[in-house]
Length: 85
Image (cartoon, rainbow, N blue to C red):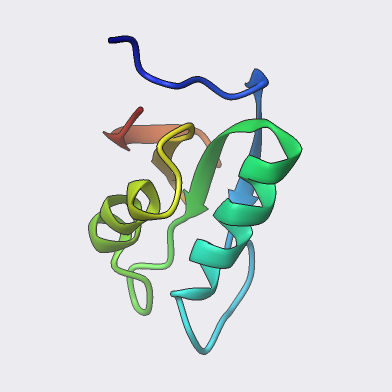
């Protein structure tokens, strides 16, 4: 059995791009993105508030079609792939 893929795997978005009181907001963002066919989410790093590994680990719980990566706040480049479909 092959893993499900998104309609547009080459497209991605920044989840939680700014400050949030509830990092779990990204789960709803991931669900909206999946409905649009977006293939991956990059979580903006804020080490003082967001636990990147926990957030990237939770994203596949609401979407099996998206990859999740953490990004460096200094460079905005993907720094590590945490989970993928």
